Length: 233
Image (cartoon, rainbow, N blue to C red; front, side):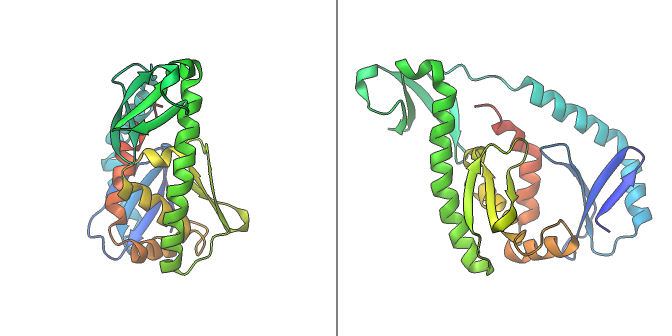
């Protein structure tokens, strides 16, 4: 069983032989997930959902509210911007001090004053370029280990998804993946590479992911709980 419907709630069921308890998480895009030991009875899952139903509704509301309340960047001196999980302060610099509109130097993002009107676009471009380099290297490394051959890596805006495995064996990643801590971004990479073996989130998919990354549940849980915090750029 890969899905479970309880009243107006639909869950993806992810079974693992290593898991001993039941756990419900609300993913970044509001997807509901139950992690369960392999072979858990469906009625036990339904009872668990009913027991946690108020908590689930509260989490769905909280996630929607947090997304609405995410502060917009103002691009002022001292404002923090994430890169591979670390926050770097912004320093606005005079137009004649650097060639690039935006760069990371001396532990700070440095933004030319004349680039301020298009600051977000410059950040997106900078992040996308770094994401392409970093993710391509990680994909190459993990693909060799996992025995898969992706046709290419594409970095773009994927909306609420961190990654996607497309036609022709290309793997796609949201440019915001480069904002995540390294070990979480690595999880996104491995997750998508597993899709080259298993297109859907079947039990076989999660078993294969667990073999490739035994602690994936901790990383996935972090992403579900805290991934939304990297939304604002």
